[in-house]
Length: 169
Image (cartoon, rainbow, N blue to C red; front, top):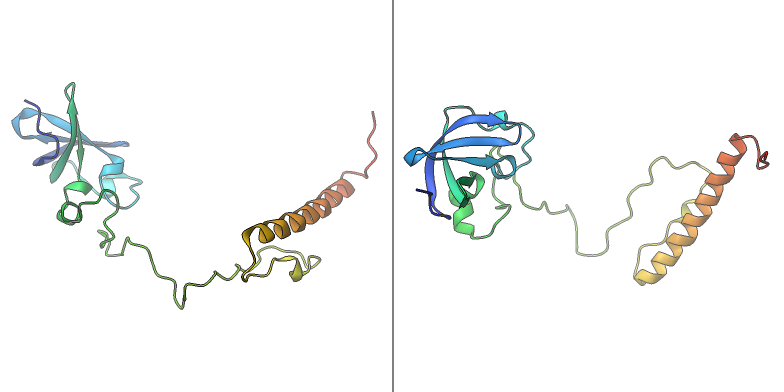
């Protein structure tokens, strides 16, 4: 008999693979907990979260044609109470918080432009569009014109390193 979809069951991890873990359920059936359904954090290696023989609570996601798909992260009590799929916004198993982190000192205004990385001293800092109450289209036009100038400088620099602009046929 296949378990009911949406029910929470107890099981034991029988096999761990690179894509998830197989869990033996009551009644002799077994199902797969996909790697994406193990924890609310990124799971690179299933062995970091589960071991063979470990008892786990699982939520039955689907059961059809003898294949049972299970979830450990959705069977957790904080997931069931929130009623929303996906991240709970609560603490992670490692103790860190999985919800959005508020920016320090942020007042709701536009973000300051990030510091330029890897810029040569030739490019003037005034080439960056000022952040203010400009319309999006104005900022886009300014970005495109500055980008075209930078690309032209780059192409001239590359052509100079290739041996000049003259090409043989």
